[in-house]
Amino acid sequence: MSFAPTCNRDSWIRRQALMGKVRAFFESRGVLEVETPVLSNAGGTDPQLDYFEVNGRPARFLMTSPEFHMKRLLASGFGDIFQITKSFRKDEFGSHHNNEFSMVEWYRVGMPQEKLMDEVEALVSEIVGSPAKAHRTRWIDAFKNYAGVDPFCEDLDNFVRACESGGVPVPEGPERMAREDWWDYLMVFLVEPALAKNGPEFILDYPQSQAALAQTFVGEDGHTWAHRFELFMDNVELCNGYTELTDAAEQRRRFESDLDIRRQMGKPLPPVDENFLSALESGMPACSGVALGLDRLFMLALGKKEIKDVILFPSPIA
Image (cartoon, rainbow, N blue to C red; front, side, top):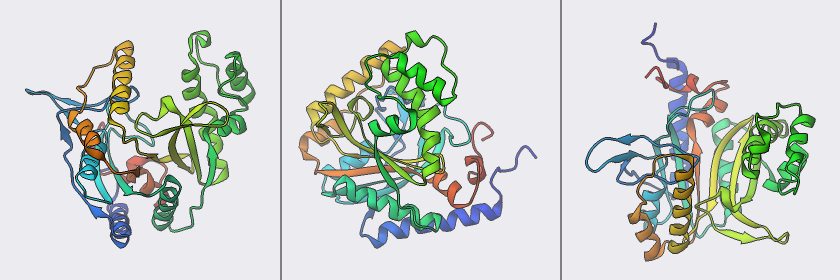
């Protein structure tokens, strides 16, 4: 039956019960639920994300995340907030991807990143029904431990040798790949598969170039790192969190850098969200925030192998 949903009724009932648990989790902690638009006058500038543009005058954009609107609420004094919402990302399909998906995003004022990671663990444990205490591994150590290579090595041929040692194909034209291209490739083919063998694991302290909305710091090694974390569980990336950047001038500079990269990649150039920058200029409070993919989390909780088994009408059949 081509019209039928890919998620059966029993699984949907169980999913809805889990959704109720998510809301109850935040309500029990005094976090306020909010609702922000899925259409905006500005799109995100992240070079790695592609957005849906809605024709009109002016053009509107389906949000890849509610982040900018939620930070405007933070700057307006709303305090700790969470939102369960749909987000949209173009050309994302697969066993763990759908271009329309559900997420929960939340912000904790004055909470350090480490405490927010504890809260992520608590939520995941509540939903999957078992403790989800996660190892915590720095990004650079994940490459050294799981890919067998220093990501800042001087000789890029070391990345080729890492592929050969790890039994993964060397991409075509390796001599044309920049260092960050190798990082992306090895993360997908060597690091992430290894993470599944260790149980839940946070990867934290990413290179500055991979965390456009996070605060940064200079480590003892002289590299600039971003206060960013991701949680991986059963070979699934569940969340992405930051110690949030509150400097409007620095955020504008990063947006402009993103647009330069998008221009070089031949991608569309969305307008910068001036309302968001104004919110930062007005004084957004120090906070940590995280976005967690609910479809993926429910997939793990219900023992499903593919995201389509917990979505009624996934793309492209919708």
